[in-house]
Image (cartoon, rainbow over all chains, first blue to last red; front, side, top):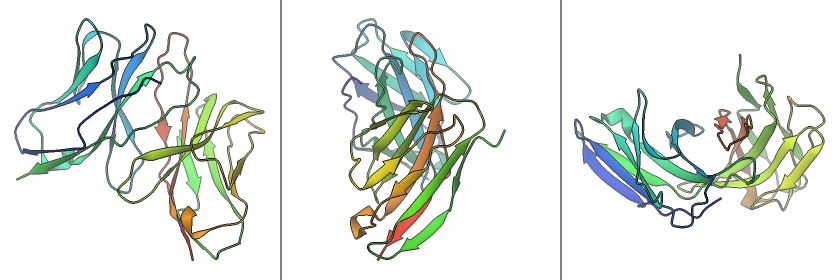
Length: 111
Length: 115
């Protein structure tokens, strides 16, 4: 998988929009960008995946610029329950058998 | 569907003991993997399997064995437990679709303490 860099931690307040950026300069042509969310004492949960431009689902949006060297996970109007660790992964399962998680971004939502 | 199930939820071992952590999935996923997560840390890949009969090492395979005799099951064996293996262990599974799309489903985890 391509190496990714994301902030170690972030704080925000309830009701705010939170953007977490992930850098992946050596992303390959067939790589997808995937984000996971992990609450304490639980396994990670898939949030969103994209290849280019913008993807939106009921939980989040994923913005990917044309050069695909970075991506931004956007969480609208966060609540205390969005406090979690967010992981950015870049790769292609059919090529990269090893799905490696980095340290992720620890998001702390304040009241 | 039950998804990915793991047993036991909690386990305490003495140094030198062996045990098997069980993982099963009912989604007919080809890909399965084991991770460990130490307190405050990210997940580290121990072993993975791309299909029945095929396994390979991840980032931290030492002290662990796996086998994949069926699509559904992927047990993780601790050969001789050490305090450094105290951790939370997660099993995950995924289908593999050409073009690179995948989504991993994680089990609830097994919290292991080695004294």
